[in-house]
Amino acid sequence: MQLENDLKSALHGGQFTLYYQPKIDASSGGIIGAEALIRWMHPDFGVVSPAKFIPLAENSGVILDIDEWVLREACRQNKAWQDQGLAKFPVAVNISARHFYQSNLLPMITRILEETGLAPQYLVLEITEGTLIRNVEYGVRVMEDLRKMGIHISMDDFGTGYSSLSQLDRLPINEMKLDRSFIQGLMEDSKKSSIVRAVIELGHHMDLRVVAEGIESPDELKYLANLECDQFQGYFFSRPLPSGEFSAFVRHWD
Ligand code: G
Ligand code: G
Ligand code: NA
Ligand code: MN
Image (cartoon, rainbow, N blue to C red; front, side):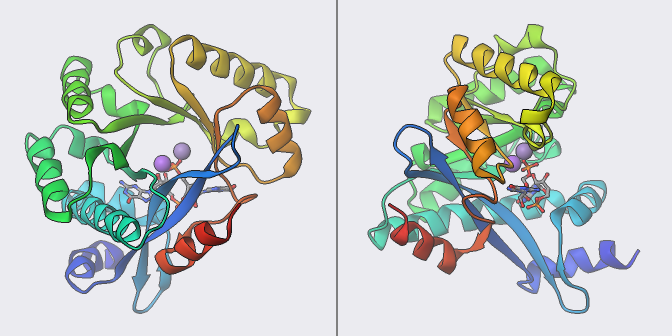
């Protein structure tokens, strides 16, 4: 398949780039983080969404090289922002399930942090519930090792995967991200709003911060703030931006 073949040369050809989307703190209203999101600038097809090419990359195994590139680039960029005097915040990187089970994951992250000079507390790894299906015991150990290094772990797309609630208390995570499917139409749907309310309460009981993603309107924001959601992300604040636009956005916030 055309795209799948092109993926292999895209990394070496410098066709990938990272966009950044701000995470907003509910209590201060300040920017307290960024999620790095990959974009593929395809020479013939223009911008290709990761929703299209990440599954292909996972099938072919190229995902391992892509994840490594994303990690290095996000850490390098965050350190560069810090060196430029931008307020310090963690950058969150999406790690594929497949990579989580590679024995070189920890050494690789250690090396990237050393190479880029970024302190570990400025890196967050976002994993999905599905990551743990394969082997919970092993997954939990990896998460514990990452935590010992000072890296935070976020459970992405919470509520859409298969992880059972009975396992949640075993997971050494710092953050839950409520999937945006729960946020859209939240106020008109009493089932959705009960789920969201319950998840926020659950997260707080477990000393986790709860992040709502996909916030698109002031009404959604107000509703989630009332439910004491801790952090917000979504088009209402900003779409994912190229690095230069993102740092300008941060400077002009407040
Ligand atoms: O940015 P966008 O909404 O188009 O992303 C679509 C999907 O691709 C999301 O599920 C997102 O988590 C995933 N994704 C975006 N960037 C990366 C990345 O750098 N690595 C991995 N593994 N997935 C990513
Ligand atoms: O799976 P994951 O949560 O990593 O996906 C994040 C994706 O969601 C990003 O690719 C980003 O482009 C997209 N996204 C971020 N904010 C919004 C939003 O407010 N609305 C919609 N529809 N998508 C969003
Ligand atoms: Na994510
Ligand atoms: Mn998500």
